[in-house]
Image 1 (cartoon, rainbow, N blue to C red):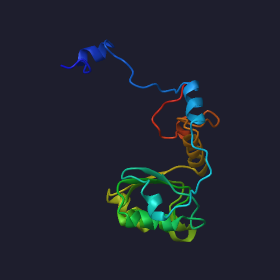
Image 2 (cartoon, rainbow, N blue to C red):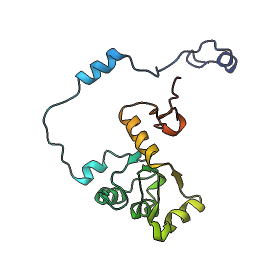
Image 3 (cartoon, one colour):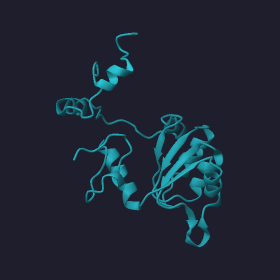
Length: 179
């Protein structure tokens, strides 16, 4: 057995255990990383195809807008044309964009606070079909919880505290908060 592989009994007893990565980045390293960022003025506008290249199969993608307001439909269609797969998408309120994501087969999970064309039409039939058939996963969170998850992820925090509601505000990055 190689020295990097510990036996099950050693792992259970805690012998030969070493942490491979720290859960907290030291402040000095954070400052160094921040100072080394490229802050030059440069062209940031790119084509949808160039932007789509940043999204890898299996990625989690945050989608802006709400219902049909400011929905980046061009980007959604570009992801479909690029035949991305196994995406997880997070959005405040999902409408026909979610139908396209599930129906095209590029998305396997949508996390949102509402999935419908509107109150009068009820729940999306496309979403219901995919979820009931086991082809996709649908997670429903409150509007506030989704916003707080985005905020926590933006700050690279494992959670965002809101009146001690730890689990509700998880950013999903796998780290547990210290109390």
